[in-house]
Picture 1 (spheres, rainbow, N blue to C red):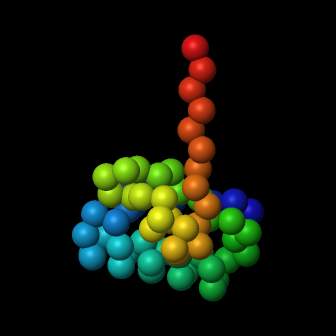
Picture 2: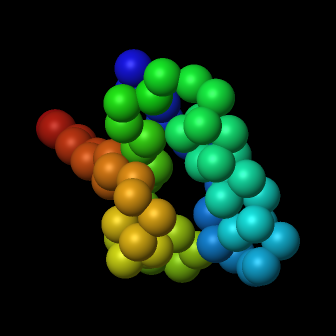
Amino acid sequence: MIVEIRGAGFVNKGAELMLLAILNILRTKTKVDKIVMAPNLVDCPYEKIAHFGMYQKIWLESG
């Protein structure tokens, strides 16, 4: 199962701790194969997503 987390980020320590709590619950109490987050240069950079073992969502636009 692939889970996408939306509306979370690394804006401040409180937001980061809430995200870490979600990751902990998903990894210990569910059968999640991959956790995905969309990167954001302001409050959710790729480096942080990779550091916590999540995959980066790729955005493609056409036309």
